[in-house]
Image (cartoon, rainbow, N blue to C red; front, side):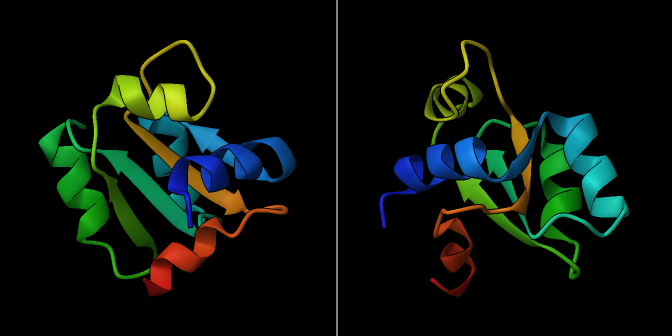
Length: 96
C-alpha cells in the first residue's frame, strides 16, 4: 500500500478533517476511524492521541510540511482524522 496515494484518495472520496483542533473534535465525538500525526507534531498532542485506546493513531514518518504535500495542500498539516475512507484502503494501515 502506498500511504500517500491512499491518503490522497481518502481526501478526494471520503471525509477527512485536517488540523489538530478538527482532529481532536472528531476523536472526542467518536467519529475518527484513524488519526495520522506528523513526526514533528507537538509532543503533547501526539502523546494524547497515541494514548487513546478508542482510535488508532499512525505516526507519519515525515514533517507536517510533507504531510501537507501528501494531502495535496500547500500548508503544514500536523494532524488529520479520517472519518470515512471513501474509496481508499488507508484504514488497512491499522492492521499493518
